[in-house]
Length: 390
Image (cartoon, rainbow, N blue to C red; front, side, top):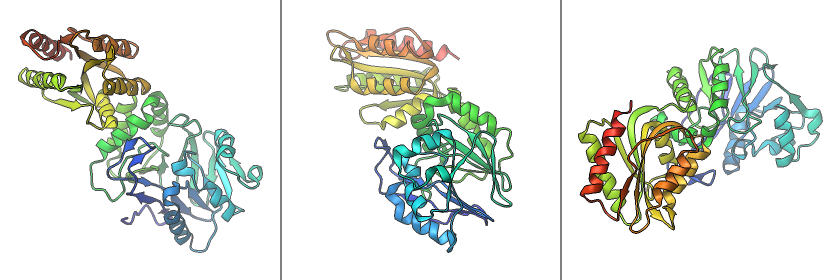
């Protein structure tokens, strides 16, 4: 892994994981993931979170090299999820004089994961706005409940103006992966934190009062330049505002006829002036990317085959993922296919109407097995109506 420089006093001690295939046992990570951890060296020494068990040996080596024979005074626990907290017990036993810094919920959850010797005597309990002096460096604590666990907190280092953001501003991909931040940060945020937009908005309000020169998340690159860009993306994503003006066609097709109809629809939309149309086959696309695309674009057309008197499974999965993540504020169209009893349209509609501010436009297009002239005219009508919506 390439050297990560933060400052003379704040040292990166995390690790890249390029062997992992599924993050949280569900999200494809073709470029791996980073587990970030930091060490602040001052009159007092603070470890800022540990990392996942998969890279424990590398983390311990990085930590010991950075400590250079010294012992840490504090372990700051921003988030207790195991990919960040696995080594808390190890570190607590190795350094019995080290204090643990957390909030009420942190210490309520710790015994569920770890057996920490003398935990009561080692607690440093912090609440909103509290500070911890390390010397010239001072940490100020801000609670961030449900971003995305209830015990989450972030820390602002006042001397170097660094915000340690836990899972906030995280990204899939190892640190030595050369790729744009937005796409994998979007996929990470929408799928992992996306349900908690209100809580993220609350955290952004707190962050807006701070003079931030650098953002240090627990996954993904340290953000040093153009911080307005990253903060603006988080504001868009967490407010459920469309990020781009475009049409995402999410298609769930059994034998290919529904997908062929969607290809025709894409051509019609582009002919009628649509500037960006994205067509995805849900059976083959990465589901996390499809979820992110539904949040990304201003308009979505859900097209699915009928299946077992319901809707074909990949579409049902997408809609359930969207519902779980508070999907809202979108214009949508619906296309169903069925040979003898088309049911997909009603199933999709029933799920969508339970979401907030979903504008379902007419017509609901029904295809009987394969596209014909009559159903193609309905696609033309759907295209016209969805493009008229600003």
